[in-house]
Every structure is written in C-alpha cells, then in structure tokens.
Image (tube, rainbow, N blue to C red; front, side, top):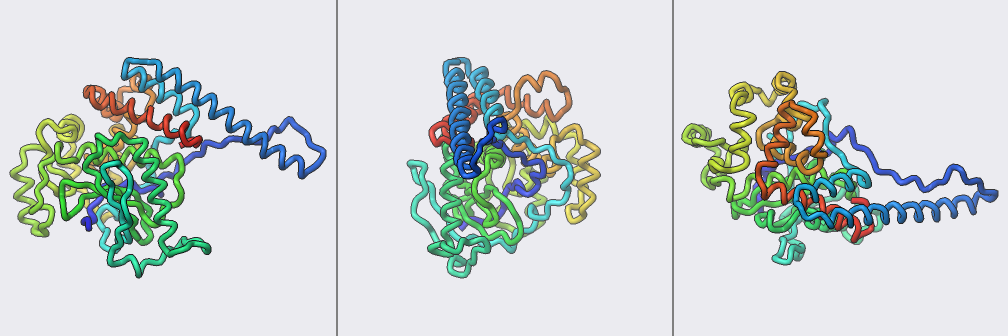
Length: 378
C-alpha cells in the first residue's frame, strides 16, 4: 500500500478547457428528406474525420524524415498543435488548494502493478474494495468496480504509449482511489518501497479527454524530477511525524529540501538547479505563506506573477518545474524568442539538457504515433 503524499494537478481548475470539434455537417448542402439528411450528415462527418486524420498522418510522416532532434520535435509540436486539442493551463482564478495538505479522507479501492512488459498485471484489491460504492456506476455494470477498471486501463494505455518507458522505470503501480469530492490525478511514493512511485486516478475522473494529456505530462514531470537518481530519499524522515526531525533535516540540507519532506535534492539534479535559478530569491517570502488562509498565497502569487503561467504553478518549486516542463513539451519554441519574462526563462531551462530535448521529441512523436495507430485525436 502506498502512503498518500501526492504531487497533484487538480483537473477541475481547467476552466479554460477547449475541445477539438470536427464539424460533420456540411452547411451548404440541402436535403429533401430529414432522415436522409441525418444519415448523410453522419456519413459526411465520418468522411471528414477520416480526411483530417489522413492529413494529420501525412504531416507527421514529413516530421519523421527530419533527423535533427530539436527540429524533429518542433515539427511534431506544430503538427500536433494543428490537429489535436493542445491545451496549456493559464488560469489565475484558483488560489486555495486544500487537497495538497488534507488527504486523510481518501481511500484506495484497488490497484494494478506494472509488469516488465509495461502492461498492467492482475487486479489487487484493498481492504476498502468491498465497501466502495461507485457514485457514477452504470446501471449495466457487471460489478461495482467495472467503471474504475476500464478507466484505469484506458488511461494507462494512453499514458504508457505517450511517455517513454525508460524515463519512468520507478513507476510500478496504478491506483483507483476514492477521493471524496476532490477531482485529482497524481503520483506519489509507495511506502513499502520508497524508491517506487505510483500513479493515482481519482474515482471522480471520467473517460479520457484530449486535454488530459496536459496532466499526464505534468505528473510524469514529477516522476522525472523526483526519482531516486535526483533525490536522496530519507525513509525515516518520510515516515516520521516529529516536527523537530523535519526541521533538523531541513537545516542540515545543503541543497533544495523537497517541499513534501522526502529529503534533499542531489546537487546536480534538475530541481536543485531550477530552484537556485528561479526560487532562491523568493523562498523566504514563500515560507511565510499561511496555507490555511485562502488569501495568503494569492498575495504571494501576484507579487511574482511574471514568473508563472497559472496560479497552481507557484504553489511550490516541485509544481513549478512540473508545469514548466509541460510547457517545454507543448509550447512552440518560437514563442520563447518573443518573450523575456521569467516564466519563459523556465522553459528555456530545459533546453540546456540534451537528454530532455530528446525526451521532448520522443513524447511529441509518441503522441502522434498513438493517435494515428488508434485512429483517435488524443
């Protein structure tokens, strides 16, 4: 069982969600019969969808001819942005995120282990499994858990095909969790093996929507920047509730101490370098925030607004680097040349690492590949 201490992106804050809509109705056509009209509209819609998918496929084939890594990635970024829902979170209306601090009412229902072939093994039931009642269960569901099982399988299929396996070897299981009224998707650590991470899906999550890939990339960024190669995980500290031990650990840490209390970042880690470049000068003010107040963080955020694209990004350095990485993957690189604000400097931060530039290209190409293979606009 994993201890619930997650890095989260609250899906419900996506107030700016937009949809990639394919209009299957030819408004210039006139049909004499209403039944024929509906039939032809459906047929025209399918034809139009297939035509768009074909154009998408042809555009991506041109990208695959490019050998230079960064230009290949830029090509797939352009193609994906043109044909897919390409959401970037820019909302600055939410400033109170109690789920980051209070998760005591959450209950894991079941989980799947990820095997060496990167597939989900057999279902593992928790003690709460039999007591769980799915509030959104379908009337024809064979079991009370069918929707959750199908959702976990669907999300894993898309996530695992988008994110290269070699960069998430620490991700060992996927959970379906009753989160009460919270609508979240996140990652955390397995308390039985602190080196392992887990992916958690809230029972409030519905079927996959193309905007969810934003959250996938964000959560993967946590796995990337907080794995055992990046952080010195202190298991005793993690499992301790002694405030004195925590404060002593912070004081003795010569690098950035992880906000979630897991230990010190390695000196050459992505997050430690990111912290010193973008947070060192404001961390004193950040530590003065009263997180039980709904206004305290809001004042801090607007004092440094030019550093963040959205209000969730400023909640701590760990969320900041995850949001910045998501923008790094999805944003048109030419836009960086036109802006000098610090939030754009954070995106440029990742381009200094050749391995991350290659990773960006892999993710963008993978998004294209799975969309074409499944015939879906993921």
